[in-house]
Image (cartoon, rainbow, N blue to C red; front, side, top):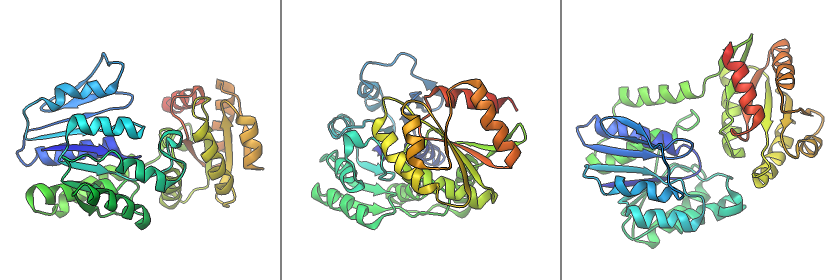
Length: 331
């Protein structure tokens, strides 16, 4: 059986959860995640050190291997490459973790357009589409896409923890493979692992959360609200911008402007290309900062003095994110 894991957020987490769950039931499983690090797991774990020009070719050896279950992450970000991936893998099950506003320059500027882009990647080998998407109107688009190729559609259960649709997806796969639901202890352990992923760290007399890989406003809103509820603290945001992610900058500018109106959002520090104009657009709570150690120290000192929770957002591969993470990790 072959499983392709697609969607906006939570793909790697979903692949790893599925791998552990299915292997614990005596199946031989190989899985591959993509992103900054391409990792292959079977009985061991190994990183693909030399990566080809096209990440599609990383999957050739995996899909030719002889295992009960093959799980691969579809990291493609255009309708064409997502479909090319599925034509190569020929999955029996396709998972859409969720549909959120990211890579809008390739997939569409609205959630409905992005959902249709995911549907355009569906191929004839697919027998089941499993989705963790919460929005009913988006789910209907995915369901119609599945029915168009003769596949069944399953909506996974969701819980209150960010990313918990991955647990519902794992249970849906278990039902598909074994016809059984996940037991209480296994589900509790998975949810506990997720909760730990969304826990703040303490450093230099302040709490902080590294959400720099949270690249879409829907996920940012979910995580910020969860952290606010969990720690009952007011929040400062470090919004780290990139010149090659202008569409992401645009959608986050609107999100941060609206979010800044909440009483418990105290300050938004904006760094990187276009940070001056973005800070002005957000409003009074936003401050442009330089991408240097002294500015990072000013952010850290302010957050510690005011007793706030610092959350990094928007982009991971930025100079300011590197500086802040290095400084905060020392403590």
